[in-house]
Length: 124
Image (cartoon, rainbow, N blue to C red; front, top):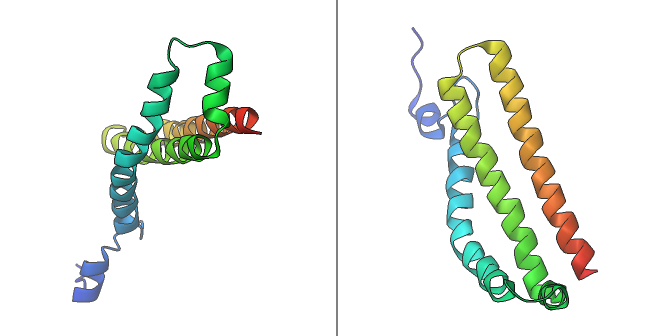
C-alpha cells in the first residue's frame, strides 16, 4: 500500500499524472464558453434568413471572426475533454477504448480546423 504525501494529494497526481490539469481545463473551457457562446450566437442569429453577402459581411468584421475562431477552439476542446471522460468511464475493452479516444481527438481537431478554415476564408 502506498501513502501519498499531503503535497501529492493536493496536486492530484494520480496514475496518469494529469488528473487536476484535465479537470481544470474542463472547467476553464466551460466558463470561457459562456461569454463566447453569447458573442458568437448574436451575430449568427442576426445573419439567419439574410442573403449570402450579408453573412459574408458579418463575419468579415475582425471582431466577429476572432470570436467565432475562439468559440470553435474552446467548444471543441471542451467537447473532446468531456467525451474523453465518458469514454474512459464506460468503455472497458482496451482496444475499443484506444480506438474511441483516438477517434474522439481526431473528430474534435478536424471540426476545429474546418471551423477555423471557414472563418478565415470569409475574413481574409
